[in-house]
Amino acid sequence: MPEAVLAAMHRQSMDLVDPRLDAIIENCERGLLALLDAPDAHAYLYAANGHGAWEAAIANLVPLDGAVLIPGTGHFSESWAVQPEGLGREVVRIPWQPGLPIDPQTVEDALRADTAGRIAAVFVVHADTAGGVTSDLAAIRSAIDASGHPALMVVDVVATLAAEPYSMSAVGADVTIGASQKGLMLPAGLSFTVVGERADAVAHANPAPRFYWDWLRRKHAVGYRKFCGTPPQQLLMGLEASLGLLFSEGLESVVARHRRLAGAVHAAIEAWREGGAIDFFCQVPQARSVSVTTVSVAPGHDPDAVRTVARERFQVGMAGGLGPLAGKAFRIGHLGDQNEATILGCVAGVEAAMRSLGIPVGDGAAAATRYLARG
Ligand SMILES: Cc1ncc(COP(=O)(O)O)c(C=O)c1O
View 1 (cartoon, rainbow, N blue to C red):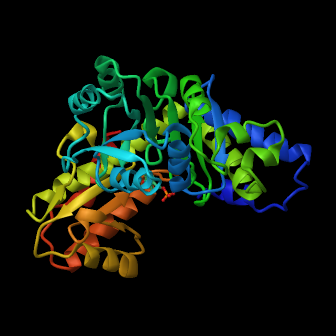
View 2: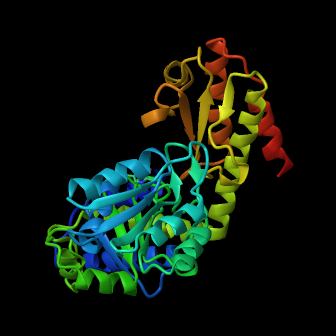
């Protein structure tokens, strides 16, 4: 989290009807719509983590006798899939292909097979944070269109927002879901659904009971009513500041920085692979996420030991493998408030941890340095 964001959050709460609070909320809504390139959509913010915004999409869009189609991307598509089931809806899953992005043809086929028209929406995770694999949203949109099925397209950009280019209007997504704690560089606890006209109409017509998540109830001019209660003021102050930082750096520069830093991490992994114990989990180079890279570790070596040594001896915090990747991988995050120095420090710390554990690796830190030096 950048200092400017932390400083912006270090302020007193205001009276809930203070016009300065209304202005902050409006700046956040406007900023998110600009960030997503969704000028005609409506932003609903929730004092909730990403799971809350996931639930909002289900509650508003899916009738009790309806279904959602969820193409498997790994741990996060499956974590999303169990939610509609928990809320009594049917889920049609497309099996996850480990290390590969969503195959758009499978989406078209699954929609064509839904002759009863029960699928209300396709829930797509843009980049699955567990595997570090990014799927092609434009191709998935074309597959939905080619099927002739009216299902809505709901896109989770939690891991890609403010890192990958994303235009909700160019993609033709009906709803976009994001959360505060990744590219927006904030603490967890604020999430959003940005809702286009068609999805708004579907929500209007959906008789399923709901209250807290209800978009209709939250479409209100009064600031605290938009939150169905007290707004999370300091998170909103932080979001206003982080949007300001992103726009002053320029979205193209933000995207280019993420690409450059991801490229340095990928160059390091290419070199580490030479030792035979380390590999990319994502098998398609163009689909490797610019936000997070999942590093597979060969049997006989312990990725969680690498994480412990990296953290305790070299001051580098890393995430572990999730779900089916537990005990088989570690993950290097390279999104948000990162620069060349933090990424080179990270790569060198991870390499030092692997070397100290006797894991054979090539010269990754040197490769990352050379990659960045080339410019
Ligand atoms: C891609 C993706 N979607 C959704 C979520 C869920 O967000 P949260 O943990 O804030 O509930 C995460 C969390 O890491 C994620 O990476």
